[in-house]
Image (cartoon, rainbow over all chains, first blue to last red):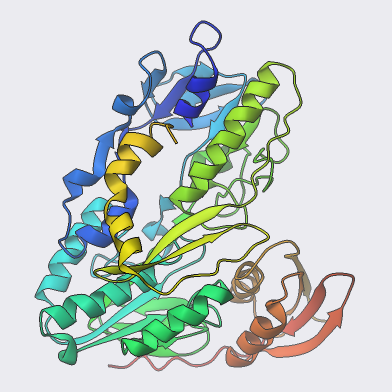
Length: 362
Length: 84
């Protein structure tokens, strides 16, 4: 976002500030590889400041509140950053604290240390039932838990343990994957790989002592290893600032990406409530829209760029093969069969991401 | 008379409307009537299936202009087995 803006504006025209508590820019698709020991966490993280122009003011601090009336961002160090235009790109918070039954015996792969810990657990797991489940919706990267199941299948086939390991996937909705056109292929792959999937299973409680997961629909499943997509939430400061309510997702116009009820504020990526996937490509296609509209606003021109809901995802089905899906608000994906070419593009995507995409070059 | 809660999920796509219903039913008690407004075509299949599986009662489905009203009465939540 910063790079897209900086390309359109000059340093003597505007001040651009980016506020981030740590400036660790994490390539999150890589967690599907680190959890199987196929990449290292250290290779997934780069300093954001190395990817933006030097003239951009990088503030290493945590935002505590946005004063929308006076157009000020307050930080934990007591600083105030004045803005004329504000872009919220705060992402989703991994909120295991919101499930009172969550403890460290439940694995996930949504943070670097969690994916590393899951790698150790998968390595030492020899026999029994792995359940991959979902604690709450929405969550980042809807294909990820299904990809994890299919990669587990391949991982244990390759190391000879698959006959002793059962893999079960639970879906909160009436099919394995939310988008019907893609689901048809996904369910075929799950059946082919002997991965059991239970639909309309909304996890309600996990008894980690009894190793039992219970659903709101009155079903339960025993497990030996539980991998669960953790609850996701928006950030508390958004609620405290009167921008968001409930779970903290920012009410955002799905086309203009302007925050509803606010003046001069846009939202992008995982923090919004727009009806599309929380995925990196979503933010990628949103950034130029917001950048163009901010430039138009500065120049007192009409803000006429809109986001059409464009999302692209690789959908891994095994080590060496992937599907690719591309869709927007009005056109559902037509996934190709899983192919080697998509796998290699996915594998080669990380360097492309850090050198080209994050730097706003494409 | 039972309390009635209206959820307007028009404009949300799958699984949004179903998840709104699930969340509301989780937070309320037996006998409460929940009316979900959904314009998502998939809801006509997903909502009745979930309602039946979760032991609630589908009171009625009303067609409207580009959306449907799903009226659901919360039933008794199924017993859990809690055993190993």
